[in-house]
Image (cartoon, rainbow, N blue to C red):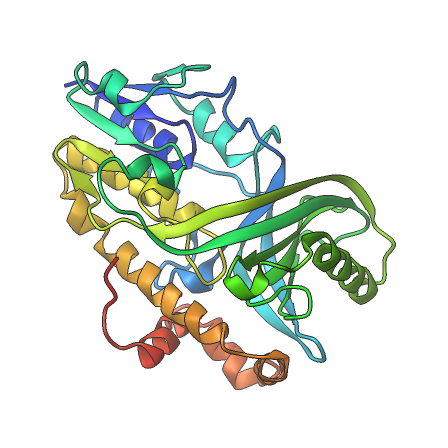
Length: 362
């Protein structure tokens, strides 16, 4: 059995690591010159989105033998709308680094790996399909799946982000819901350390947003964040992305070709995070190849989670700033806060099932 993995991101590396645990080796092809060869950014895993799993890091370690060290534990999430604010308090999740940062999750996974990574190899499916018994498509690019099947795009997103220098509490995250600068989207600030943080603005590129000036939106976002945190931040470096496809495919496996990570549809539409789902798709694909599971069945809960998330996003997109104010204000109710952060209740799943009780299909 010979397995080729195209892409050395979270899902591809998790797949290779899991194959090794079952006694198999894979060859990994990465078009860039190193693992994590992109801009530095902080991301997060929020446990409230993955109930009944209440600690993703412990789960990956204890259940799958994949060991990650996050940058920090998130103990508080501050939520802001145009006129209201609230705070969710508890063991809410983890922050971590991505990209070229020396402690990025990509680099942590690669350090645990024995399989060969071929860097600077821009390999296509046709280049490897005849030489390997199994192919894992883990490029991170949704368009790479379209030669096999449709990729159902929920929306295209526009991002603007920066690394800020300032004073931060690494255990605190900040989220902003304000249609003035994040139309039908959001912004968030996640600390890297006590002196650096990522500020990210993300919104969908719907027709009504096409004529908006992203730089002006970013300026408003930056000024709002500076005002709320009462700091004059220094921008270390910036980045901008457009036409980032968030969606999902229907078939997780076609023949001996497996689609993992973003090539499967691991990004949750409502908030745009998907690291945990990406890693799980890589693990599940490896389990199928090693004869310990059926990939299509293993990802079914992840598929339902994607569609629940999309239902929730479609609902939130209908809210104007007044309704967003009411939602954020309601979070100050301790009973509601307790339900949201309860380790035995998936609040977001319950709400999504109420607004869209029937399963969606890609």
